[in-house]
Amino acid sequence: GESVGLHLPTLSVQEGDNSIINCAYSNSASDYFIWYKQESGKGPQFIIDIRSNMDKRQGQRVTVLLNKTVKHLSLQIAATQPGDSAVYFCAENNAGNMLTFGGGTRLMVKP
Amino acid sequence: GAVVSQHPSRVICKSGTSVKIECRSLDFQATTMFWYRQFPKKSLMLMATSNEGSKATYEQGVEKDKFLINHASLTLSTLTVTSAHPEDSSFYICSARGEWLAGHTDTQYFGPGTRLTVL
Image (cartoon, rainbow over all chains, first blue to last red):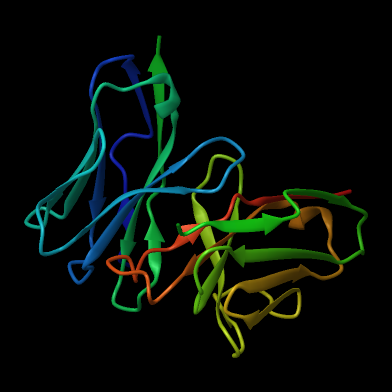
């Protein structure tokens, strides 16, 4: 069936470096994608979203890139900080207006 | 904006009792609310979708008589775990979607979650 998945389950980066978290999706009909950050014991927090008519969207220290040709989504975090340590989920909004979540990537920031 | 709260944040109960979890959208009207369950180190699993004033739609494999959902108003949805057993222990998270949020009408905003432990 259609699914959203992640390439790397765990990503370890040095504080101050940039982080890139990747996500692959298979439903070509999906038109809206969201990145969420989830800290331990808390609910997912909205980070940034992008619609399929865009290739790139920037927020504060975060950038989402969408490559529809290869069905790939990425989240870039600039100047990663210890507070960025969390599990990051990509989510795909399908034709039924429901979210399908990827498996999650744990980002660990080393001081 | 787009704040969603849940209550309680943590609950411990005895096997056989029922537990009610509330989900509220604090600063917007949520026409649709969602209930998820999350096991340790796993992704979110959608349990059901509820629209204000109508019956919830449950995902396959989720017992509707076990997990009662009520979406009585545009700001409140409740999940009641009936006759809870240890295997119901989990992290339950709600989300809300408000159709009037300009530019984010498809976005689900999540509550902080409720940790349920059934002894």
